[in-house]
Image (cartoon, rainbow, N blue to C red; front, side, top):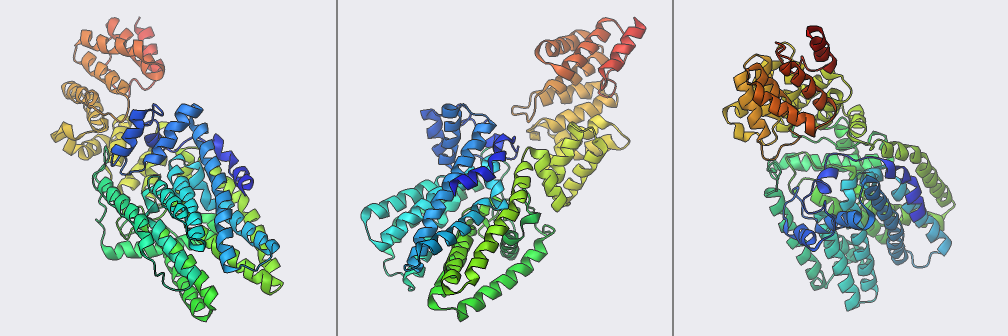
Length: 592
């Protein structure tokens, strides 16, 4: 099982990274980027709310990647792949333990065939790609690993009670919770297993108290972190109406169920904004309704053992998805669905499949056809799995796939639009995408990027839109925490001939304490504005600094502008005139 899982996702080791969380969790994290040290380990526990999460054990594994394996994206991907392979093996053990309790007299051949088919379907399914190739999703791999170990020890303790087994189950539960807070569901899944195996309400509830105490503590810490995030916009956890959160959760459940059997529309970063669903959202609602009705009908018609299997599978899914379905609160209303959320919950589906196959194989010959069909379906999904893995090469490829499946995804429009502008030279298309994104979901980050690009494009109406987008910053420059808006205002003023205002805005942009990008271009345009005002010495000081400390396009433009100033050439410097170094150089040569 482990080998098959590793081979299926091996191509993901050579992919790049996704800027959404990958960088922020590792090399952008002040207590992770320097590797394993006592100070960093302590900080991982005491920095409540970094990126709105408390997951110290996950951060410690990233530190270990850097200190023990040298770091780098390949290393982080390889560790994720190893964890998935280990989880495939542990999942086999967990399902075997459960299978034996429901079918103690089944032959080893039937047991092996049933569990192998079910685990392979889980381990190789395209929905696993996000958890493995998205480096930031390691928390899902880790909490699932410890959750499975905790449940294995719990099942053993139910069979032959032992303090050691209970203690190990509690220990693994705690490790799971500090890997990702979603693990607070473990006591509830353990309770469901206890009920299903005994087929009566558990009497000894005291033994759940330690697990439940850990879950409550971690749940309270998580609520505090998401309500008081560090270096992050404040998260409106309960901002959306309860009816919307419930409806959105039901839609998400329907989409999860549908994607298990038809995963061809899966993508990165699903959209679930108040008032609008993804393209397949309405279908998810219908599918959930049909599936729920079918399960309820089956539970009434089935035998006692079959009813226990159905209820355990359903409660396993509901309990483990509960913390991320959004009913108990969402992150600004749009985080109720992600493929990575299904990593542990979908084991319930594999459990149901394994037991169903075991029953069919013992009752009649149709079981062989069912098992063969499942193996064939798993094999047919493999090309899609590999395709999804390759789509995670970088932001552009990941979000381009998202746009193919959901053309109105606001974040994908922003990311792909930025790529069009910055790397592909398709500025007009990129601007249209950014405007569309801003209309779908008002966002300061999107507005900053759009204003900056419009200030550089300089078409009719662009500067007016820049001033409109940046109006709050113009009134109070301290509101700009990234430097984008002030730089856009400075470029706009420079292009419109107000050099004094350009100097003021660009100087303020350079002085922003925590800029989102380097200040090289802001300094370049500040040099232009100073030169246009006749302050040649100050301009040359700025431009010569860039010539000596930067490279590439900025260095060449600074050098060309310095030559123009020293040569006494009367050419007004603007970003548009400096877009091509050759243009300035040619003018200098002509006048010389």
